[in-house]
Length: 209
Figure (cartoon, helix red, strand yellow):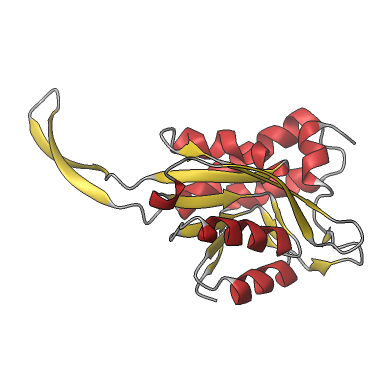
């Protein structure tokens, strides 16, 4: 599965374990989501191109490298994806941020879009979609459809926990999109929640349950 990247760094695994604990409070949970997002983003941006420049250090002139001019945007899926934005933008503060809002119909489990606000030049940018959970994959696929319809050519998807069903759905529907996640869980339950998972990420980030 060339386009599925499970980032099994010890710090990521440790933080995900703390997130799973039902006794972890809102403040700590929110911090863990942000920190884990930053660590996964480190790997998701590994292929950013570099260019060589010349600059003066306190000792001499030096040839050194910086990230070249490729434009990047992060697009959180509302609302839970917002919990990952501080972490990813701490690594790439110049990136623009768009928003796509979708909710899962409780009967059909299909995504319903209710909001989209994206940078005007989104078609010229590489886009990383962020959402803590990849459950059925339907919402992620719908968001990718939205971005491709606007002309976005290079898309990655970043999550903290994925289900096998969601990853398979995405890889079949959008085989050109790389998935970066912290852990692959066992399965979806009858209500389409990831098991063992960590519950509803949005409710736990925002303290709404």
